[in-house]
Length: 217
Image: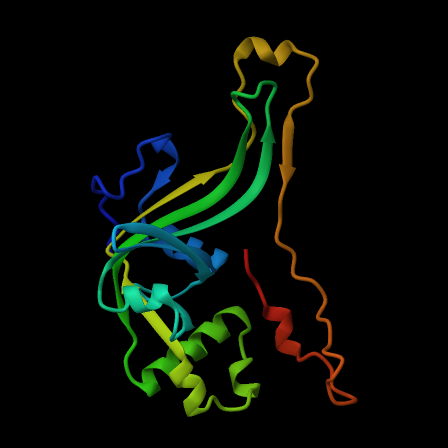
C-alpha cells in the first residue's frame, strides 16, 4: 500500500519531526491501540465520541447502537476525523517547560459509510470481537436478528492519516543539567489482568485458553 501524502488537513505542524506518514506505522498504531475518538459535526456543532475501533485493510470500523446520534449522522458519508491515542509515560524534566509525555497517536480522515446487509454487518462484528479476543466469536451463541437490527456498523476508507509519536527522555536547557533536580520517565502501561469469572457461570467452567492472546494498548 502506498504511504499517505500529507495535505494542509493532515500535515503535522507542531514538532513535525515526530510526524510519520507511512502506512505501516499508521496501521500498526491502529491495531496496537484499539481505542479512538470520532469527531464529526451535527448542524454546525462539533462532537467527539469515544469508541473502540478496528481495521481491515485500508478501512477503519467502529460500531454502536442503531439509535446513536453519532452513527445516524456519519452513516450518510459525512467527513469525519478519528484520533487514536495512547499515553506511554510522563517525561519529567528539570523545568516545567521541557516536561512532556511519551505517546503514540494517529489522526485519520475520511468519509463514513454504513455497513449494509446482515451478512456484512455480522462479518464486521466477528472481525471486531476477534480483534480484541481472538477465537471468542466461535464460542458464542449466534447473533440473532433483533441484535443485528439494534447494532450499526460504520466504516471509512482511510483517505489521509498522520501519526505522531514521542519516545525517550527530556531535552532540557543545557545549563539545567547541573541542577540538583531528578529527571526521568514514569512509564505508563496497559496491563492485561487475570480473567475474573462471572459468579453465575455454570460450575466447572474455566477461562478459555484464547484469553492469553488478548492484547490492547
